Length: 319
Image (tube, rainbow, N blue to C red):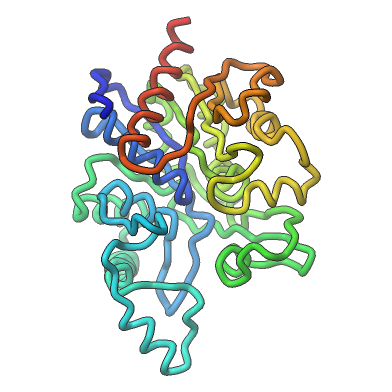
């Protein structure tokens, strides 16, 4: 098990999805308490059963709290499904699975939002209730909704991702509302103070691009003196979880997927981490790279990868 790193300088992680939540958990267990702040994608938020659902925020919160479902990576451990079963029996929509414990959190979030608290404040209340030592920040407080362009027309993100299981061919994305979103003081302060900025092994298009679409946020990452390192979500030419490899191929990126990800992030990056199964791709990269085992199973592998990535980031400063 990796030991806690002594450096308590703030680390900013950009995350979404199960891969992002897993890596953020490794970072939290490797860094001193409070040193990590996770900026989370809210582009896949939506309204369901009259509630504001924030899947990526909740996946990160549950992972950092150690209460997530270890089999799926999302949702709650030891969940029950009585409300969902009754909703379905009464003729309601049950394609998006909300368990009873999960629903309790959504009800409380909705109550606080309706009382006037913004999403940043609500998320901080929830992480404190869940005893999460790391800060968790939504990318913005305003609604930004990912619209997926497919060969079957435009689909809201959850319709594409959950209801249709990513079956339609991917053509592109629009982040509806992004132009009107505002960079929060909390996110801006973090990115200006961060000693390292890490882009987690999340889907670059569905999870990270919405974060970078918030006006001013990409520029802060680009202008930061901190090393910016991205961890590849691709292993052996395939996605560990989710549709990123399928999407890339449908966009015409048939080969050299790690290189495609580096080129997608462009001048944001100072370093890149790729899996040892993609070692042959390292010679194609034009920036410093770390090749290692990026598969995260148990907590020890998450901690090991996090420690290696943090050390790699520090080496970019030192060298």
